[in-house]
Amino acid sequence: MFEVLHGPDAGDALSSPVQISESAGSAPGKLRIGILEGDGLGGVTPETQLAVRHAAQLLAYQGFILEPFGLNNLERVLELWWFFFGSVISELFAEEVRCREDLLSPMFRDYLEAARASSPAPPITMERFVTMCTARDRERAGILEAMRDVPILLSPVCAAPAFRHGKGNWKTGEGYRDTMRHSQWLNLAGFPGVSVPMGKSPEGLPIGVQLIGRPYEDELVLSVAEQLESARGAWAPPPLL
Image (cartoon, rainbow, N blue to C red; front, side, top):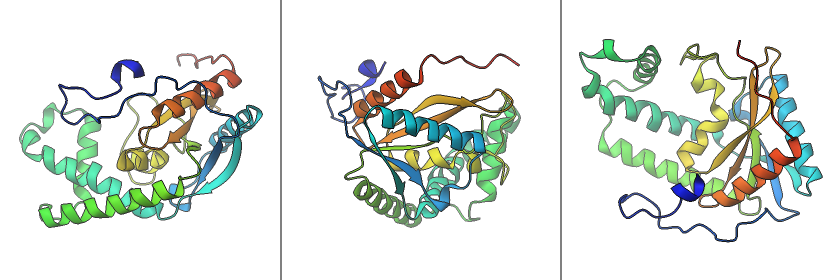
């Protein structure tokens, strides 16, 4: 699928003019992998923490060098994420959904309400938008600098197992905005990431770990994920409950 999707597309002006490596192969031995840490990410369930430790062990057995990796200023990064993916997007949708809210899914209505509640009362000005774009670019540059010698990061996908279908929400302290902090900053920075199933919760729900790479190094991320999956062995999906 990646081979179908990759590379520049003459029909898409926003596609990046980057060609895929024809000889990606396996990730080289002795590659440094950082186990992502940061107070801004919040805590995770014991089972999620165990899944990350298990993945780190398996990667170490494959010859990778695992080490703790801290990212500073993650609270600010996540604030910027919510500005773009909450406030800005909800404002863009405002006219589209006005007087048609009853046609929206409950989840989308919940998201729009959460975004509007945290947005400033006046509409977002162009000056504020450009200021936030500049702040985003500075944070992205800082992350790139931190990852200069550590091309892959390992982290949870989210703080807890998946919500049951239809049970997710955007409530403060328990919803997507809080539980998905480990993944949100990738959307802001534009970094590739892949989820690998690695454990189960006491209820039998799947728990994944996340491998994160630098921009345009998708092949490396996929190669490390493939080696992790191979070391983990066959995966049995949880039974339908």
